[in-house]
Length: 153
Image (cartoon, rainbow, N blue to C red; front, side, top):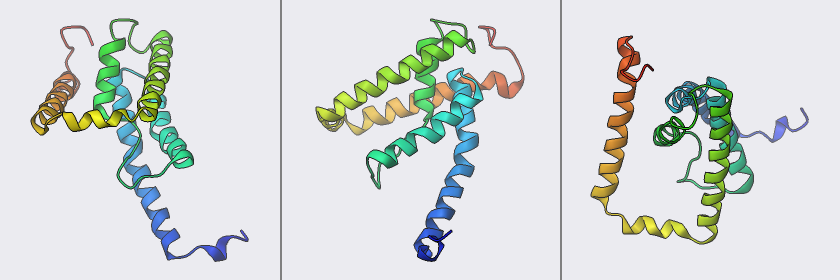
């Protein structure tokens, strides 16, 4: 409580921004966990922990971390064939996949692998993003209509 006098008007703005992000991130993280075939609590962890780790090690005005739809869809695509969706084994494999991807990203960061992105043209990136959006929408249609997909999910 002794630190309260040091709070200024910028601190209030940061507090409001943090609350706003949390209000958006909670339902978004739950939805992304569902797309990935994981329990909701996993989505909450992936929404909360990466930004905290990023804040401890680095800062950027332009880069954000946390769950994204494409990562969720790729996780489901990779792990769906390896274990039953929602099982303990599936969650363990998702954790292993996250560690492997994190190690790869760390290695690419050390080697300055981000420069490869400059070689990809805008139409390629737009096509990739559009295809991902269409796949996500198509995967959610059975749930919206309350039906069962042909694969039984």
